[in-house]
Structure formats: structure tokens, C-alpha cells
Amino acid sequence: MKFTRPNDVEPTINITPLIDVVFILLIFFMVSARFVDEHDLALDLPAADAATATPSARALIVAVAADGGYRVDGARVSGPALAASLAKLRTRYPHRPLRLRADGDARHAAVVHAMDAASAAGFARVDIATRTH
Image 1 (tube, rainbow, N blue to C red):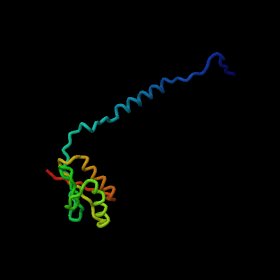
Image 2: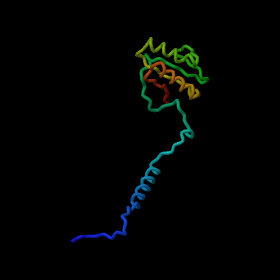
Image 3: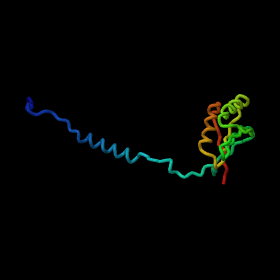
Image 4: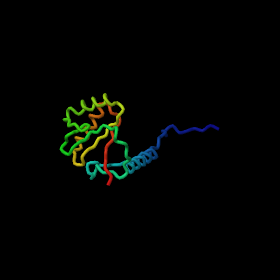
């Protein structure tokens, strides 16, 4: 038995299921996406309730004052000289950790500058000091 097909019918591809799957994926990604605007978050940073205490006897202390001034182990240091001062301390005390103590009213840019200077000086880990309530 020989089956023949009429010559005037062309094969077609039904794309309706493909479109359904694409729309379902689009809806899934729209629902699961997170849109967070971090500029609108109200933050009260320097206090921490569940901070773990680490021994501070051997840590090098970098303090950021409310006016943006820096102190490295008690000595006042200017912003541009901060990285060089930390690099000297890193070569003198290679195994001591670095602890950053920032005033609650200090500008965020000053704290980030201190962290960048610590990274440039070769400190792989910087602890941030907080206070408990």
C-alpha cells in the first residue's frame, strides 16, 4: 500500500507553543526579579547587636573622625598620605590585622577612602569596629 500526499499542501510549523513558552518565561523572570533602589534605604550604621568581638590588643587601628580626619595608631595622618602610612605599618607589622573605627557621623566617602588605602597597602582583611546597644 502506497501512501501519497497531494502536491499542493506545504508543510508548516506551528509556533503557538513556542510563543506560549516564551511568555511563561517572561512572566517568570518579571515576577522573580528584584528591583531595589539602595538610595532610599534609611541606615543607622555604627551600632551592631550581633557583632562578634575579636581581640584588639594586636590590631592596627585606623580611626576616621566625624570631620573626615584620619588617625593611624594615634598619629594624625592626612588623606593623601594614608596609603603610604598604612604601607609602612604593613611592612613593619606584616601579621597584625587592621581595624577601622569610624565615627557615626563620618562621611561614607572618608570610610571608603580608608578602606581603599588599606587595600592598596596590602591588607587582605579589614575589621570594622562597632558598638553594641
